[in-house]
Image 1 (tube, rainbow, N blue to C red):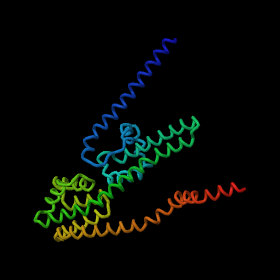
Image 2: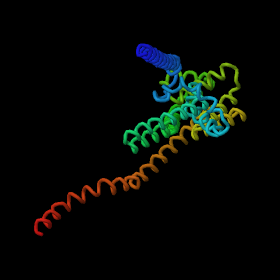
Image 3: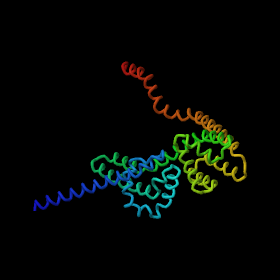
Image 4: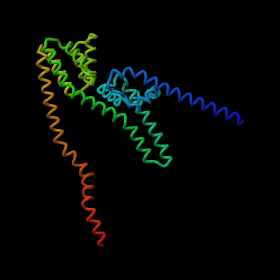
Length: 291
């Protein structure tokens, strides 16, 4: 009987080890498949989400439930705005969030039974909040990158157009000579869509709907209107570049004016008590010594 239990335990252990190795191999294979795609983009998915991506097929039926319809739509929009739509879709993202939710509950229970209830709740909360917070942060970072790069790209396009080239050739030359960034990725995708036969106005509108960054939307709408009305694009690009620079300087002045107000709370919470302690400590010690 003991020999049978030993053999059974060894068999179960071997099966568990094989299953774990297969899981690790599938994760590594998934990362290898995504490597070529990530080499073409500046946006990379965090390792924590990559680890759970191979497990998403098991949770997709739950992620497809109508309860998560709004969340799937929001996830698809944010992934598209953040440049991740070719790497992960909204359904898989919701599936990863569900997996992290249950893993967080499991870790919380383990830590709670070991006497660390607060730590377990903190771990669960972090795993629950992290995917959404990361995605919104990535979208905001991408929008800021596009906002900073747009005036320079418009200057180069206006110079090239005014030199006699058409808009598409100017765009191709500018993209070829610039380092790849968020704006370059989106413009390069639009340029390839136009090369494949999509109308220029349609491709520019798709760019606006895909990125949804206010400055880029303004510029693309102006280019679409100029294309429809037959207005010179060179002068329009130069005007848009000057307007964006003026808007950026105004935004910088506003942020500089808001800085003292934002610094007030940390100063009152951290700096002022330390200064007060340094000034009042000798007086308090002398008073205590007298009494």
